Length: 360
Image (tube, rainbow, N blue to C red; front, side):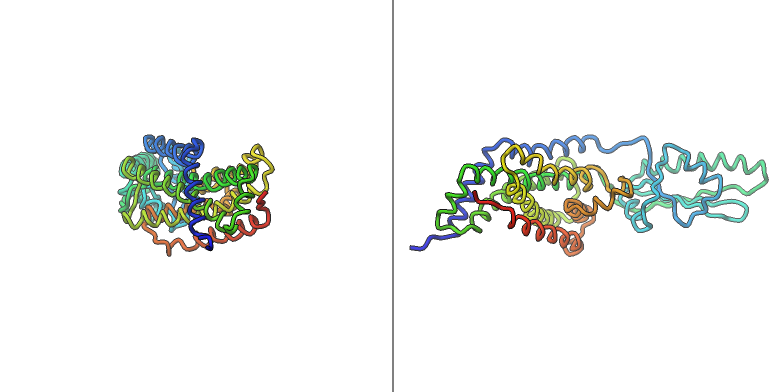
């Protein structure tokens, strides 16, 4: 009677999943550690004594108004945003004001746009500008020039909370950790204890052995992802702009990303000669992505020479896709470039893994 490859694979998946739940380190790295970051940042709320503004690129900056503004420590001027990104960040409340300075006769008109998503910080921007203009107008009266005018505009938008940035990054962190560390340690241990060799001696095909073990990682990590998203949403107001549709899109992206990251784990398990060498090799893959892929800080905050490195990392595209889907309401089709780049990384990973993977 022929053996059922599918039943054998599911049996391997069940046994592997049971061992994962019995492993405290797997629970800590995949669930508790990301949740600690989410809870901490959720309670912090992102307050700051400074406000973030941009200067309209059509502004006249050869005047004392601009010279005064750029010397004010409380005004953090971002000169790296495009016009499209300025409006986008302003509508989210991530940027507190857009300032435009235009020549008008013998004087100037200062236009300031603030967001309904960041009312209080927008008021701070206007208060600072009114103080600057009042000081300049006092000087203007002494030289018989027209008074400087301040015009205000409010841009409608939704509040972009700290949790809306942090949670996708922590979800990506959890998936990458599970894919690399979990897979590497598991397959190295199975190889060293000759379990893989015994599997290979059974009628089950090699591919079903690998898929069975990988499927257990996938199930466990997706369970962790569900918990992370639900806690973030119900306790800290993480934005799921289209409700269940957004949630399902996040799960699809998480599944795709984890399949890609499992490839990293297979590579590490094939290269590592013992358990002591796994952390060193795995950290070479994960640490740059944790730090440079927009997990904790926006990539735009990095030096310009470092940003191309960030845009070469697969976790960057997962983080961007998750944030666009959750807050902007983007569909999977809207983030197809991020998905294609992740798939390209997957092809590279599994090609390398097929060359270095060992059964014994």
